[in-house]
Length: 507
Image (cartoon, rainbow, N blue to C red; front, top):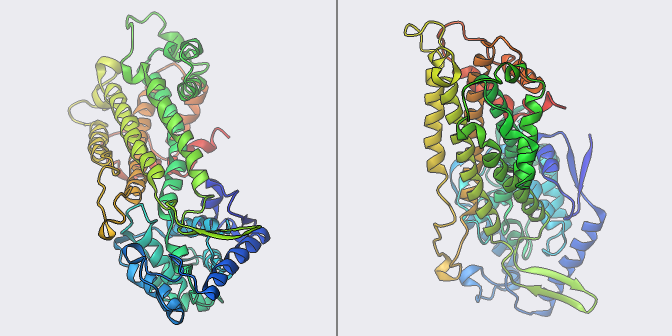
């Protein structure tokens, strides 16, 4: 199996995903090991000197002025983890937990956190052994790091609490100590600063946003593919996707979207047969698709840039810098997730917009005034409802997405006796944006189902890309030959979109 060697600088979203799925293992680079040992020695030198430094021999947050005796420093770190492990809510998806663990390890691998390499070795050993601590999702404020979720992770490393272990493809709950023993791993005994280094960072936010960005990159392509199918389904105009239109407003995402739509529509006989149609212009949901889809492409491109910097950053506090003239321990705020929170809020709005415009196209495909076909594409109007409720479901999802698009960042609540007086709520926002992306995939799946049904009732052949898309849809959804429950087929197509089924057919 190929191994990802983490060094704090070169981790990608694709690597994080591959490790979480078990298709790649992960190990610590020798350079990182050396940097970590140097920063750890700096922490030990401070302890030997008797100097008082926040995070090393003091309390935390509002208790940062309380000096802790040397004999109690290990107990301090264990207490920190246990007291902060008070999350609630549903258990995090173990694959997302493995992403979070990989990202946390990479952050520590930068070598400025003062933690022993052996602690990261244990963390990576758990990842490679498919051991994911059971972590309640809710508890992080997205500042001071994802304290509660990461504390549950650290408890698992200490051999406390429960873990989910993948055995023969299934996740099984086990006592953490037992899970570690069966994998040949020793529970960690945290030393000075190490508990704080493990729990003080943006790793939960990053994990959720990693999966969201990967989803959205697929969904942006899917949205362009779905509009192409829908244009053919209503015998719509291809002219709005002409390159000259978009070169005259050279927004990158818009140009990418238009080019993809044009490629899907290439060599269409449907367009040729409809050249002398009396319809002058199509509705905005068709004509303006590149102008709506394109900004989402731009947003996701920028979010990937920000996120790949973040997963290769040191996000705990304080940081330990070892230089030629000695070591410096500096308190700062790299744990604050405002960058991720704002991106997640924008993605949630983008999901709503892509779903909203998709639902409007579904409406037109099912409307005889636009499609020229029977209402709701029913075989026997009145007796059968056809795909009527497929649109209803898409409309219901729009309402879900409308609620989810409310910004998480505007709900700041000061904590820790006012010392931590501004938080990002990025963990809430990042989880919400992942949910939104999954709901978006279902709306697009419903659009594909409707457009495919309509296209197959048209005598002329669609564009070469649309033809492939219709075949892909039919591999998951049978042709409508009468009313039937569509739930399982709609969900299967949605899952295929997110699993890369659509992208695979285009290489």
